[in-house]
Length: 455
Image (cartoon, rainbow, N blue to C red):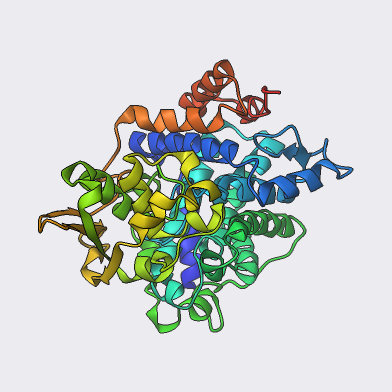
């Protein structure tokens, strides 16, 4: 039996009754978070023209729901559009073990297929859990080598995760699920250059991964199948994306100790996760210094964060504000708050933010990134003109399971992001359906509520 076969067999062995109550509640929370981020992203720079193109399509009233819109589309197209919209604001959940975003690819693919198949709430929750397990295990096995090679696991591991989730809700047997995984491995892609340039196109990787997951499963229903050693085989996934740095031992770890879905983080700033610990640090130190007295701000964080987000120039547009650590820190110090709407061109042109940005310096410390020690954080020292200093260490940003926000903040995020799409009564109905997701006979009882009721 190949490693890929063993991995699929392990995932296929999972049943809804084997899920812990903690895993089920975690899945519901991440479903709510995904829908909020998606509703907030419908007018994004990539989502808007893509949705407009679908509206002009002859099949815009047929197929599955394109979430948070009145449109419909074939399952794969709906998955693509859901993924683009859900990743637009950089507010979807993520996982530090696997260096990417499982929820947006898994749920973007799963919703249209589950709706088309009229899957039950329990089937949906099981498929979602399998999708997260696939993403985190494959992403963790391939990283950090994958990231060093310039590949982002949202597009690579994401395609495989979406496939496994969709295969589960299809009710595929082990061989069919393996065949779909093998097909998905052929089209997995996602380059990190999208984090450095053309940031407005980064959501395409998430959408394409969801699309690939749906297509892979559809091809299996046509009698097709991919390689049965897609993960570990010669010229397979690990060799291509990670080489000798891959560590496949995590693939076959026992399920449920805890489930992977319980370990993903939820974001409260619409920016790359690598900027969040420094932003948290800035917010914590702001009241300990007089802003006019600040001379130098030193941010110490892990090499990946420095490489991808420590920029020497202010951003010039909304998309690039999301991948600029100094902008987020300067914004936090100047304002004392960091709101969803602050990552915009107007704030990027703010002279007060620019002045604070000019005082920032960066240092690398690999010790601030350790999966074993539960650290992926930052340190900040603010030196003032009068010789005083303020210092803080943030091991993990807020929203990690080990550093949770107050419970009401998670629901408030959903309410704030989705209020332009759904009225308050509709928001409450959606939350009620999510709360009782395992009781739904058909997932359509939720998707029917996800069309806009705002003009």
